[in-house]
Image (cartoon, rainbow, N blue to C red; front, side):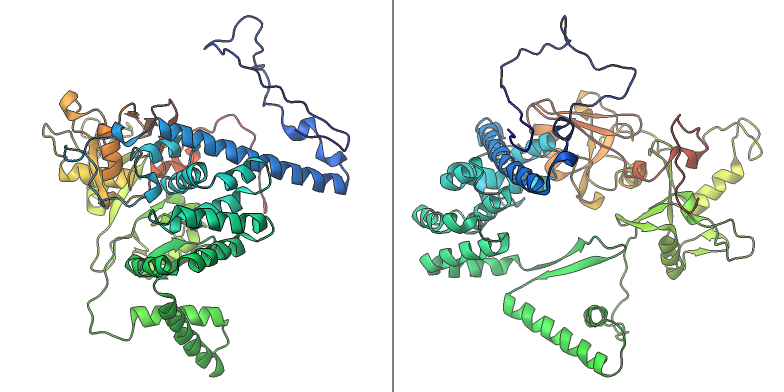
Length: 528
């Protein structure tokens, strides 16, 4: 694998029969100390290499990475052979896929609709990432043999091979195979010398050059994909509103926004031009000066620890500096940012949290394992606190009995309104690992089917989007379970298990609930 600069590794591949339990003489990692597999940088220490040796080794690892990607492509293509569409329910039968209901890559036609979900679970991908990988893999395996060979020989990086395949796929299923072969033959010799962006443009140019009529047809079809959507950014508390529309309209919009921003700048606005442009676009959309339109309403979901909602220390009688992390519609924010948002909504004051004007407030109580204990309004929570434990002396009792909990079970198949409120608060979306569908778009599914004795209660119900509800019900070989803390376990037909944990488990620490810390080294961080 590696040679030169004072190091060398020989690689031997041998078929082994691996039993379920280590046999006689098998080496077992020691249990009395930390152990990990030998790492390449331990076998071949990088600190001893010269600068030229470091660069040479980087180039060698790039070649090996390309070869591994080609091997991954082969593995995915072969798995697809075992997952043809005849595994799915035939059209017309209950539970069968509805044509056009769920958008996916046309490259996956002819394969099981749940192949993507299995590849996502095996590789720990999101469904979108698995779809893109499979589409590229099948294209390289069946339509771009020379590009796959260049990848397998280490002559082309994965990012460039993927770019070529994605541009071919963008042309759709009706593109002439002869045109594809011609474009590949023209572009491939120079692909390794081009940046990924330049390579994509080169492929698009060649397709237009060789089939302008098809390119015009694709342009007209693309008009149907115009949309506006939200995309998270890497900057704290910031997101992007992405508008997809014809290029000439997008260019005109940007020019109008930039002109208005530069006019404000020339009039004396000292802020950065980008900040002014963003404000201009927001004002053009929201039109804060227009009071004739009805007010905009929204549901705001906030997940935070109690520490993040402590009284402000600047207020007389305050309880100290707020700490912790909060989630606002899935976006992590600091405690200070969270309090500023709640104050802007007039939802926080000397008396604590309250419903905003003309709004409502729902409180979710989360346990140490991240499991949801109860979903209450503030009056319901206050009434439970006043009432206390009816068996041990009311509000003065210190018996630690639970005063509230999940809604009771029902004998009916359909969940009650209280159960739906509890479960959508607990799950916040589809619980299939990696899925981001919102709870409002999800079904309430019986983990153990109702027809097999599964109860309609919060310990046997979870939110699944319609696609993953169908996967659980109709896809062969999958297994599902829900544990006591609300963790959802999904096992693929190939034996890979992934866990979807309740959203609350990612923010809450044991010490925030008065639990003892485990034996661990506690490292203080600045400012100590």
